Length: 141
Image (cartoon, rainbow, N blue to C red; front, side):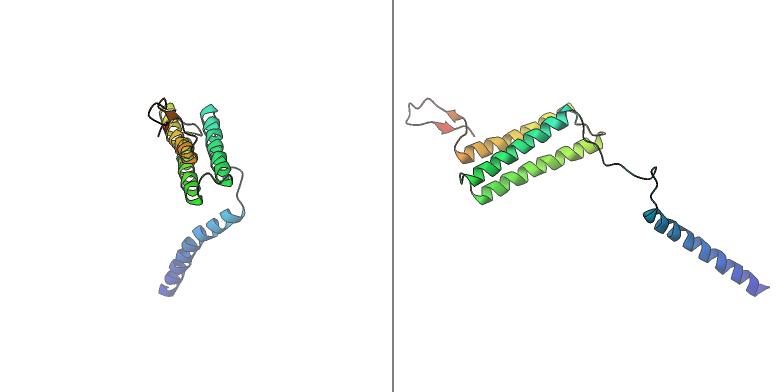
């Protein structure tokens, strides 16, 4: 009788251990429509505007690099800063159902404007200050 109880206990234990593993394996192969998770859809005018602004700055960086007005190191640094802003925007949008609240949007735009201003100063096309009375104009930045 004792051997029968041990056999039942061992069989039950094996079944309990195998069931979650079999379920996990089957879930990987047979993902139902209810189980499918859609990626976050980034929507809204702020997200669209910010994406377009980032793409514009990236294009400006590529153009400046192709024209040899900035070095490869400067271009890489500017691209990295723009990519960091893009990643931050994605994180904010992902945490707020695909939207960016006004405060974060303005902060991200401010940060992107700093990258754009740095690009303009590096290329020598930044806003100039001064009236030239002292012999020249100076980049604002």
